[in-house]
Amino acid sequence: MNPPPPPRSLVAELTYRCPLGCLYCSNPVELAKSRAELSTADWSRAFAQAAALGVMQLHLTGGEPLLRDDLTELAAAARACDLYINLITSGAGLNEARLDALRAAGLDHVQLSLQDAGEAGADYVAGVRTHRRKIATARMIARLKIPLTLNFVVHRLNLDRVGAMIDLAAELGARRVELASAQFHGWALLNRAHLMPAREQNDRAEEIVRAAAERLRGVIEVVFVRNDYLAGRPKPCMGGWGRGTIVIDPAGRAMPCQAAASIRGLEFPDVRSATLEEIWRDSPVFNAFRGYDWMKEPCRSCPERERDFGGCRCQAFALAGDATATDPACALSPHHRTVLAARTESPASSEPIYRAAEGGRAAFSRQ
Amino acid sequence: MDAAAMERRGMNSDAGGAWRPRLAAGVRIRVDPADGRERLLFPEAALELNETAAAIIRLCDGRRALAEIVRELAGQFGDATALARETEEFLAAMRERRLVE
Ligand code: SF4
Ligand code: SF4
Image (cartoon, rainbow over all chains, first blue to last red; front, side, top):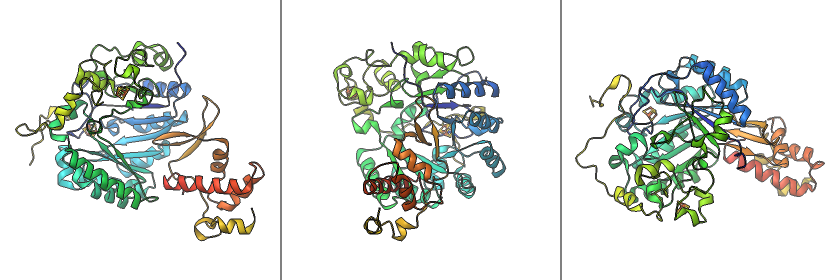
């Protein structure tokens, strides 16, 4: 086999710890049992190997990456190998001194998550009181002239307010606002009945987004990431398995996608015992779904396969029980009915399940 | 490009003429060691730049006006009228995406 083209981005999940408990969190439900996280030196070595391999962009994420005390050091290490550094954060734990230090270390951009346009809705989804501080944090980032993207994960509980979200983002001085439909991995899959929007609600929201994008052209970039359950077509997940991205989880396991650990039976190489080059080129897990040979029908003979790569492997495993199956989000999948059924699931009796934050808090008490 | 042509392209208007484009904060240009090509880095992508685009971007330093950028490149990249239009369209698109300001 020819060596694969080089990876372009590295997603560094620095920790799974997080003070928030978002209903839509896509972190694994079985958070890595051991708390052992990679050391500063381990991460720095991984950054250098990634850059040498062809990676240009680094996304520092988690959990909440600000919970790493060595975050500034890590940014400096990444900058030393000329990586573009994007910090993906809930903002919890960010103050001006720290942000200043991060910038001095080489931070290029911040992507801040907000849960809704208003406080009540946002704090309900996050499971903790956090919205007000996030707004203050966004203003601080803008004041320090650090380029900012605001990211709203959108779903049934907040889709009616996309217009207000976009206006808020523009008012806060963000250069870009992403309205990303909840993807049903991790906690979001557990809470799917609560989060899955009705088609009409979704279409209304998309229309509002389209109009706002037009109106705010040149002021703020407005992006909507569609709900693949409603689209009838899968997403080209990660731009294809092992085609451009390496994810490293807090414990040092390298994977092709942030949800890959949800696929049972895959073994992930540890960045402490192999180089990223070896992992990228040779590891069975990165090669598992490269190219088209692993595909089954209908993907195997479908011309769309070059564009969507048969969709998301993790979703195929979760919904069809087979990681080599066509993503059930695709209308051509023999398992598409599970997706159709999910569209009409009713949240009726059950309470949503909050991701247990630090210390095993079982659920958010609303008062 | 003569003055009349620049006028037609709107490059003497306030919007075009006074604009001194520069890369927005958080946008960097760098050579890709993998293939030696220049890429524009921002959070969502590493955009591959063709030779003309890379040359334009390198002149977006906030000091040169749009017309000056075109003038400097005219010698290098053939037909001035086509170049002016290309530069203008390219930079307008970049501005819309808030990569250039
Ligand atoms: S709980 Fe919320 S903020 Fe924390 S990692 Fe999950 S989605 Fe991100
Ligand atoms: S059958 Fe497979 S390749 Fe064709 S559109 Fe569906 S997911 Fe994509």
